[in-house]
Amino acid sequence: MIGLARREELLKELGLPYRVCDVSDTEAFAVLLADVEREHGRIDILANNAGVGEMAPFEDSTIDDYRAMLETNFFAAVAGTLQVLPGMRTRRSGVIVNVSSDAARAPEPGNGAYSSSKAALSAFTESISYEVESFGVRVHVLYPAWVPTAMGQGAVDDEAMPLPPKAVRRTAEQVSKLLLDKMGGPVIAINASKLPMVAGIARTIFERGYRYGIKRAFWER
Image 1 (cartoon, rainbow, N blue to C red):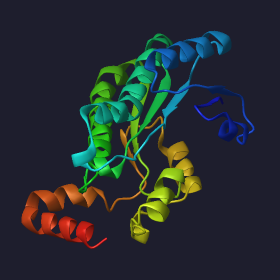
Image 2 (image 1 turned 90 degrees about the horizontal axis):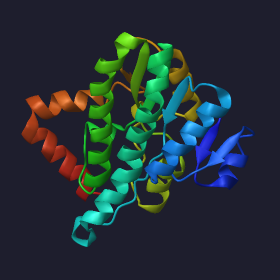
Image 3 (image 1 turned 90 degrees about the vertical axis):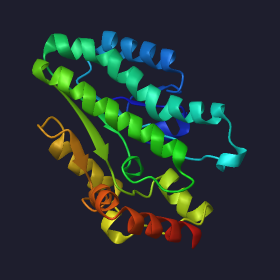
């Protein structure tokens, strides 16, 4: 197992071999993956977990702010996926996990850039899974629910976001176990919580009530 991130001090805490790379530089990311594959002979599993979530209000944002978020949350995962797929296809085995978010399925006010980047990632993952499964390659999209990571907990501590309901809160250990149990199987979407899946149904059937509830929750923060 090899860890990859842009902050070396956090990688050192893993106690595993690691490489330092900012995945938003998709060309450098692809080159690094190619180097790892040459060095170790193969990449059996790729987990694209990098993500950023902070964004200025829309009136203070530019198109470049949106592009920057897409570079990390979407294009990096696409670059990694496309880089390792040829080798996996040749070997007729391999697993790719792209970490999305329930925000992709249930976007909230003030979260347009993050939600759209994760929605794009979900659509890409599902689409490409159809193309490669016949070659023995499994591609999954993981919906980890809310996990107290630096980004998740930071939104609660620094941005006054209310703590999500217990039904959608998961620990990193719980999500890791779920992923290990499910990846490589026939199901594309791996859901840490079932509750957010209801949002799409509620929005379709009870759109006015759903929108009212979302707006009220947002403006009462």
